[in-house]
Length: 307
Image (cartoon, rainbow, N blue to C red; front, top):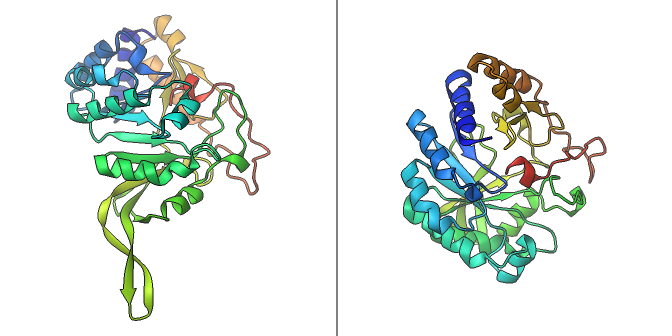
């Protein structure tokens, strides 16, 4: 999609279909030369629309202030490890310092709350959970752990190898006490928890764990093992203008082709509605057992769909 086509599709979503928030994803949105123009045009059309962006953070330090000035509201950055060697192994690029600099630049530019997305993988970075949370709390960033989903380019995902939400809570409990955030979830994919440091407390019955002051919150997106499909309110348009009603959908509906054929806004909105009416009630991975035998992984990887 070119910039004008993105602008029109967003306008149809907001004006005709009640879209209340927009997120720009990828691949990697920072590589688009017209990114600032796109953000600026959307902001001019929709002064009150929250506009966020998900990025790998490389080069964000050079664009954060300009993105804020153009109208971007906040930023999500993918970061799975704070250790240089592990980061390089996961991303295949030695750019950890550039990502950290970009995150700090986003905060300084006012693109908050800055959210950090982390995926833990067994035997690779599953020991990093506490370090990531400690760092995020110290910076006032909002960390969200995401269960690894079967959207990898190599199609090597198995449920038996993933770090589940239950595993994440257990890993964090070695240093912290998590309690349910009293705020309403309101359709958000992340279940939020208040975080307090685990400290030694003495009672008349001996020494036991006690909780300290509130340090912040952490989110866990349990897309696989604790799905929230029934409350999902999201719709997704790929870079090629295809509607996906679910990340795991194997059906895509061409909106861009209809747009380029001269369709009216009402016709485009109708196509979009038709695509969403057949949204599946569940993705099919939450079966008993280690692997979901009826689940078929989509051909597109997460990087091709847009995170």
